[in-house]
Image (cartoon, rainbow, N blue to C red; front, side, top):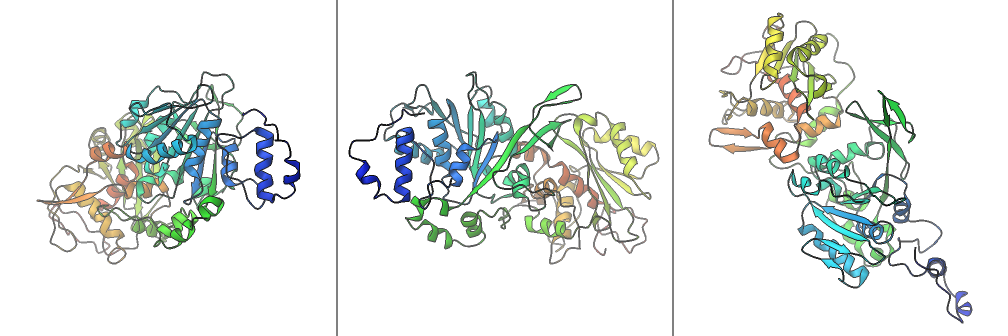
Length: 519
């Protein structure tokens, strides 16, 4: 904190002529001295804290600030580094995006003294403070920051980051200085692509309109990882779980808009945001996280189609609709999940999801499948890796099972009959696309699971010489640092039907598989 300032002589006669905004500025200077940076304050009433001031003082371990444009998001990160923390880092997805932040720091300090542009480290005034800049353009770039401790980690435009990158970098938050506050601050606008949807799930009590227990802006909620699954807990008090002492961490979200920034309001920036086309206008002017996101043009399944299917979902299928299939995407250990996706006609039940650590072998996954199967339904099992053992165990026990090998050649054609597929994986994913197409598809109903939404909207496609090609799991993992297990399981559930249902299905492909159309 800066030293207390002594009011100049003769100032008493001028104080009475100050308006409330001027009085607020004077109060800050007299009380604390002229700080190097201070949060925005309400010009109409200096005693009312602005959203930026609330974020500056928030007790949350992980804070999301912003939503709309113009609320002083980047200034908050810089201000915390200048005044409250000793070792800070501000991340952007690319180094090029950091240039504007570097310029803003120089503008506040009125100097570039102490900045090592090559090392991206700024020695700040104030007795040993340091501000570093980092970037993670590609999945895996976060490894370069492993073991580098900071007591403040900021993610500018957090929706541009992959969830894996964010969680990994958060793991190196620490300080050896006694009493030093440690926290993570993420800022940004609503996501514009499916890859940023994880932010809504991470701060679900504030951002997900389907959350059963919504939180108020600035309210603290507590979370802990139990058995590999992140859960919301009652308080921040440590508790014992399976002989381990668990310390929950708090999260919060504080929204802001351009109206909270008197400096930008005077420039007419609000009019600029008002002139933007939708949904960008709602996202940047109002911070609307539920405003429509534009799908990648090469996204196999458009986001809006999946959302429509999830909006149609009810907790039970139509009466007398038997279980047709279970899509099985097995995992053994690691961060992947074993996912089972039961389907009753066009209605998909809630998926059964288990951490890979709980399904170490084929018999374990097979037992899980048997516990869910009903009425002789067909189990469509991905036989790559551990899946081969799952298939063998089910078949050996007389269960109706189909091996799903996405690398096999496909003889099928798309709905138009003009395009083929590079392999079975492309065929199956395209079948999901056609089934969800609102113009030609069926009334598919998907459970309202945000992770399933993201997984279905993650894979991309391209037109190759042999037809439609969908990127492989390996390519997706390389791009987003995780596997779309829930999406794959749903795709497997739709890929093949049992041929003895007698519901008017007809073989429509050279391999004898059945078309889902006609439900």
